Image 1 (cartoon, rainbow, N blue to C red):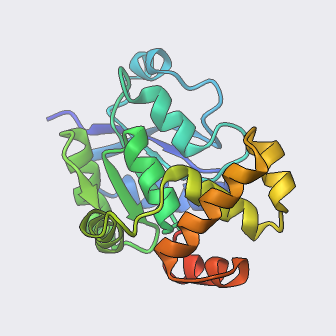
Image 2 (cartoon, rainbow, N blue to C red):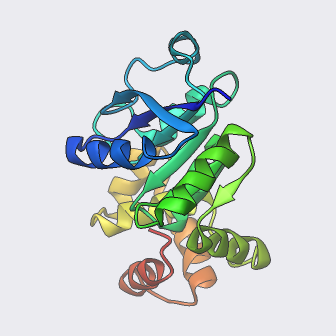
Length: 205
């Protein structure tokens, strides 16, 4: 049987080299292409190279893993996210973008192997921590923050004021305050500092 053709995307050359060594050690998988980000990568370019699975990090200079996943969701090969980022914001963004799998980089080699095979079959593979975060979000929908609320929390973390938040998100300051009320209520806090601290503890940001 023809080995599964994989493209590795990570902005750290040493990490890519290590991953390539591991993946090429699997009998039924081969790395046939590499890149440092998603710039210029399209369903058509991957089809020309015969890529079966894309294994990509999330945060990279240039086109990041989430944007690339969205680009490939309709017509490209399935995507497996392999990253160190385990916040709910990253996980939800990746799954909503169309990623078939989400693993952390400390996953055992056999887990990575199984995930690549499953991704090639377009079967969902999630690290236990990732599955737990998603189940928690589903089981507690009233406590789950919306994408916009998480976006506001991330801006708060950077120290943005209400006015700066409103300007950057093209909404009114009154709308920002309404979002903050909802965020505080969902997190069970009553101020910005507590919201940021709690969100970090819950790995929402």
